[in-house]
Length: 308
Image 1 (cartoon, rainbow, N blue to C red):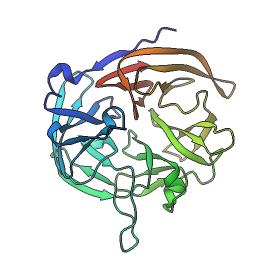
Image 2: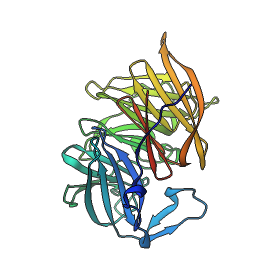
Image 3: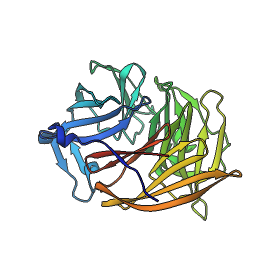
């Protein structure tokens, strides 16, 4: 199998990262790549965390959110005095920006502390709310809902939506979808996420004896969810188009990743091709995101795209 990976963007080639380091990133529902840059002088490195996730800003910090549109044009947005460390960024309708932390807890009154904030195009903080504890995976859909898959400390914690493993939220922080016992097993951790038209796909693995991984397709219009066994255990990238999918599993901190093509045949997903692919940079945590049949991969500070 020849894996046709397209280099979409290398910010170092444009001079954008000379004074600022590209940290958190996302792909918007319209295929726009968004990257939050932070002044290098505000950063410290955690030595035991590989790659860009190990760079942490001193709080509060300013950032520049750079959007690369599908036509190649760039848009710069200043976001000032960010009070908390985000783990996820995402784009919402009307070009709003969502910054979300991975963890939360209760305040002295017992209320859950906000861990997600929405910013306007002008960088104004519009609203803040809580979207659960220990968020492994976060994705926004075309309508502006927020989809989350949680890690074990959230699932076995006391936040009700985290305990369910998967959740859907409005852009104001209201719960709009819960599994309601319709998953084939109890989730233990989230792996990857993708959109396919109005569908949302969440990959997660269970805490059963086999540590099975599942792909769940959610229809936000009806709430219906359908789940299949994943043909690849614990993928870190997923994109789906009809009965075809592409999944990746990184060789952590190496300049390569395993790429799998799969097809849905007779109600089951099966791998049809598998290839260890060399990439321009080292592949670390939070490396993949799927949008409408395209899988986006971050390898070092280079973003690639491959079609399902």
